[in-house]
Image (cartoon, rainbow, N blue to C red; front, side, top):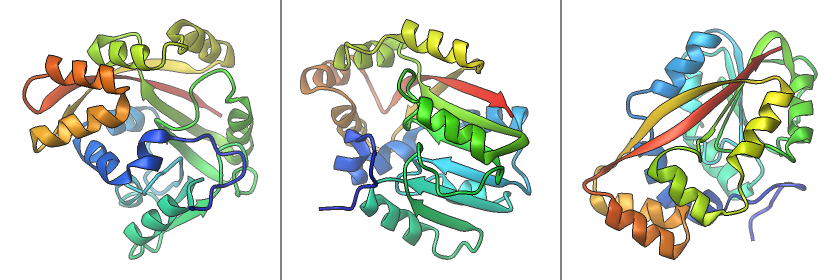
Length: 232
């Protein structure tokens, strides 16, 4: 059994099927819209960057290309191992086995924090938000990228898979916390139809996944997201 950091919230897609999730990472946002949106708000050139819930480290090398140092945090031990191997040749990258609500970092040590589809899903993530307030320096920024469950077919499929998820409650939560919000019209583009179908099957219940597969033609689908952010 993999070592799991205490207090971790399971991520059933990447934790259970990291190989298929890698296909999803490769397919998401080929246009680089998410990074461009974040950079327009707070660039990370020469900065210390924290990737919370970094998984197998897919985004760490691209962050490290311009940041002074990059820190990945991931609670799943096997994924930590994958991330460390992925970044073994990058001297400015370190990866810690830890959770968002217990970051192994000093106070005021980070310029930019990024969480993509990890932990910060609204009500209940207050411990992680307190940690962000502790570790991000004055003048720094934090970004949370998440699926926009209120828009598009992907949002509809997600809502059917997780019927207890309330987009309204999530929006109200983030508004009360003082975070700003920008819509991201991302897309997924796969090399093969079989890869698209495999990804839909790890994201949704079997019934919803098969419906999504029937409704989707070709190797591309819209992926509406939201970028939440704030300065410190």
